[in-house]
Image (cartoon, rainbow, N blue to C red; front, side, top):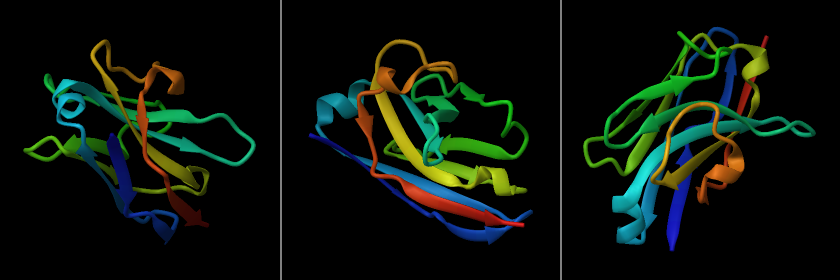
Length: 129
């Protein structure tokens, strides 16, 4: 069984920063086969949208246009923790943020939530104006 646990959410004022973390644990086979990690966000009543992706082997990253230049996705050396550094936060960034992982295949911002096989429970980010 694979577990993804997010942390780091909170409330900040516009222009502030937050750093989200996602720790992956559990099945070793899945962990070693994992190729793509992503951060999604969702506002109540709206679809879940991809924010950033990172390929766990090649290191390539991809971002939604709405966060380019402000958000940075990264991995620790062990590749068991994914981070999302969020700067210059805006009220429209307010959402529940989820970490996701998938095995094999492509890794880019256009993948759908259904393309991912493991999810965290989410961490809330609230940005006030």
